[in-house]
Image (spheres, helix red, strand yellow):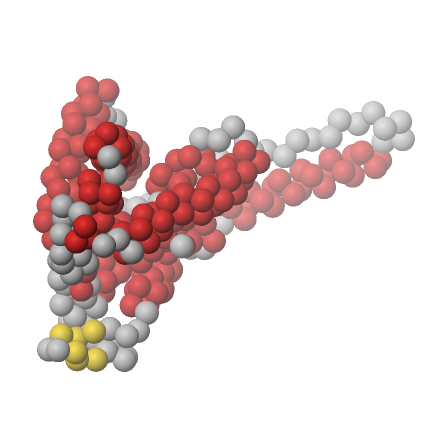
Length: 318
């Protein structure tokens, strides 16, 4: 459930709301609607499980016996409904799948092109700002690359549900700890985030995933050998998530300490975590506070109350 908080499409919809209250009510309504939309799949599965498939053109054994339970919706539409209902239902499913694929493809390419290529690379690596024509080609290439990668992943399994679970797994173990670290820990920086991704992804691969055929290399406590295959009994996803978050915080603090104490040269600071003046923020805060105090004392000293209070100077982002 926590993995949903790290999915880009969720924040895309909440941040595009007209007000914070609208975003909150949207989330509340979505929670109720999702629960309601979960009823039809349960009914379809219950009908398919109680059907005597020997009375249909499908025959015996049942879809579960043929290991085709992942195709239960199109099979139920094809063999348990009239032809026109089957055509409309399968067409609706195909349209929904294409819509979701298109949305995911555009989300992934927009995140890379706008957030990384256009904003992060020029500021971090002193690259020239990308032009509109260049951004168009970046988006086109990103669409092709993301499409090929997504298509290659489908070769590992025939189940769409497994792919959804795999996506939620990645969001929970890799993206969710970064989101929490960025929102609640000021020490978080690019170095910790980069190392956290590498460590989290490596650990998630090493603990294995039977759904896509990844063998268990790193055996956590409780791992058992069943039929010649190691099976993890520990909550591997939560363990990987906690390791990722710990790595992000530790290496962020370490990078901040090394650069701001002068232990590493500033020219090596790619992500610009070194503060130009360690006391700049403190000095600016002190000046602002002094101005506020002076404004207050001037207001108190004026008998006629006509003094003009001074405004605190604005602080620019470091």
